Amino acid sequence: MIELRTPAEIEAMRPAGRFVAETLATLRAETKVGTNLLTIDKRAHEMIRRAGAESCYIDYHPSFGASPFGKVICTSVNDAVLHGLPFDYTLRDGDLVSLDFAVSVDGWVADSAVSFVVGTPRDEDLQLIDTTQRALDAAIAAAVVGGRVGDISHAIAEVSRGGGYEINTDFGGHGVGRIMHGDPHIPNDGKPGRGYPLRAGLVVALEPWLLQTTDELITDPDGWTLRSADGSRGAHSEHTVALTADGPIILTDRSFLGVD
Image (cartoon, rainbow, N blue to C red; front, side, top):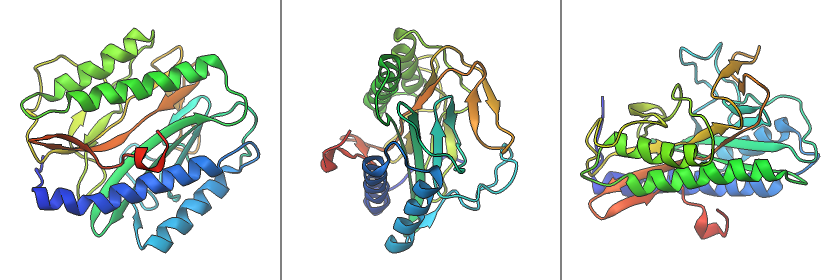
C-alpha cells in the first residue's frame, strides 16, 4: 500500500534523515586503508545506541535474504554492490566501498547510501561513482508532484546509459515511512509518463546503482551480498526524498556537513 505523509509527518521524519546523513558522513571520514568492515559495523552500532535509534537491518529477513541480516550497515566492496554483509575484511589501497544505512528514529525511517574509494582511486571507479551520483541528482529533480514514477526511472536510466552502463531493475528505489521497504517500487529504468502518479506527501528512497561492465548479479554464500557476475566493480548512491508542493526535500542530505 502506498502511503502519503502530511507536512507534519514529513517534519517528524527529519531527525531520522539527519541522523542517517551524519552517521554516513562520519563513517566515510573514518573509513580508510586498514579499516576492517566489522569495525565499521561496530562504530555504526555505537552511534545507533547513543542516539536511541533502531536499526532497520539487524533483524531484517525478507524473502531474498538467507537469514536475518544480523548487522546494522551494508558494507559492499569492489565487485559487491548491494546488501554487503560485513565480515572480517581489512580494506586495501584502491578499494571501492559502498555504505548503505537505514534506521528508525521515533518510529520514522530514513535510508541512504554513499560510495567512495579508500586510498589511491582508479579513474574508472571515480567515473562509476560520479555516474551514480548524477543519476541520483536527476532522479531527485524528476521527483515532482504531477509527474509519474516512470519519470524518475527514466531520468536515472538516461544518465546511466549516457555513461555507458547497463541497468539492472531487480533492485531499486522504494517507499519509506514507518518501514524501510514500502510501495511504490521505483526501478532504475522506465518510461516517462508511466507508473504511479507522484503526489505531495510521497516519501521514497531513490537509489541508482551500477556495475562497470554487466547488469548481472550473483549472491555470495553468505546469502546476502550481491556481486557482479563478471567481477567488475559496483557503486551505489541513495537518498530519502519527500515530495512536496514546493518541490522535493532531501531528508538525508549531507551537504550541510560539508560533504556530498
